[in-house]
Length: 410
Image (tube, rainbow, N blue to C red; front, top):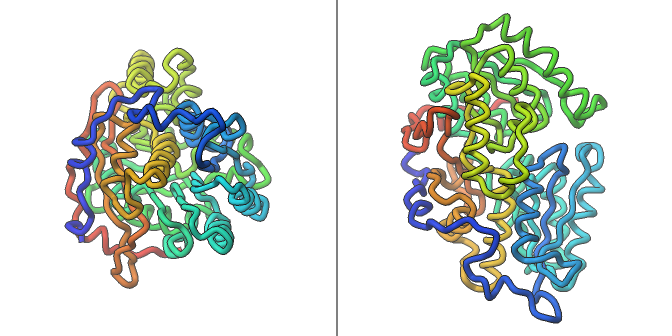
C-alpha cells in the first residue's frame, strides 16, 4: 500500500518559489479599480485556538486585499467553542456564499459542521469551490461535500514521529489527548499506529488524558492542567521521554514545562515554528513576521541558548499557515484557469509557494474498509526539523506496509 501513497517531494522541490509578500503573478494580484473580479472566503479559528491558520488567511489578504476594501479575500473566524456552536459555524460558512462574487470557500481547520455547511452551500451554489483544511470530521463524511480536503498524513506520521523519537534517544512516548479527539478516525488511528510503532521500535507507549479546551474549563483551564501535570509526568516517566499532544492549545504550556523540567518534543500535531515556541520561550518575532526561514533561525537560536538543542522539533514552515494560504492560492489559480481542480501537482505547487526548499511527502487517502482511494482528500507531511540539529529526513523513511493496515477503533 505504501507504493500507492504518492511520493510528491520531487514535485514540491521542483516547484521552488521565493516566499515574499507579493505574488509571482503580480498582475493578477492587483485588483481592478472597481474591485476584485471574484471573492474567496476563508474561515479559520481565532488566535487562541489556531493562530497559524489565521495568519495564513492574513497572508492572503496581504497579497490580494480584503473583500471589504475592494480586494479578493473575505476572512471570518469560527467560535472558540465550536463544538457547542456548530450551527453558528455552519451559518457563518453558508452566509459567505450569499456574496454573488464568492467563487471559493476554504475552512481551515474543518471543524465539525463543515461538511454540512458545504452541503448547504452546494445546494444553492454548486459552482462555489469548497475546500477543507485539516478536517475534524471522518474522511468519508467530509469527502461527500468538499471539492477537496487536505489532512496531515496521520498514518505515515504515526510511524515517523515514533521513529524520530527513537533517533533522539527516547525510551518512553507520552501521547496526550481527550475523548473528542480520539473519536476522530484521523487522530484515533494515528494513536493506534503510534502505539504499535512503539512496541516494534522498542519505546514504552503511555496515554495521558487532558481536558478538552472546548469543554467548560475552556482554553485557560486546559492549559493550566498541562502546566501542573508536566512536572509530574517528567518525574514519573523520566527525561528520556518524548511528549506529544493532539491539541494546539496544549502545545505552548507543554513546551514551556518540558524546557524547564526535561523531556523531548518531536513536533506538534499541526507543526510550525510558531506553534507554541514563541510563548513558551518568550520569543519576540515581530521583526521576522511572515519570513519563516528567519523565524526558524531565531526560534532555533533561543531554544539552543536555553539548553534544549537536539530535544525539540517542528516543521520548518507552519502547516496551518501553509494550508490556509496554500488552499487560497490553489483556489485562486483554479478560478483563473492556471490550475486544475483535480491536480495534486497543482495543489502542491500552490503549497510550495509558501514553503521553498522544504521536502514533502504524501498521497491520496485510502479508505480502510474498502481499500478505495479517495479522489478529493490528500494526506501530506513535511520533513521533521530538530532545532539545533537539522532535518531528520523523515520524508525519506519508508513506512512499513503493516502500519497502513492497522484499523481505527474508538
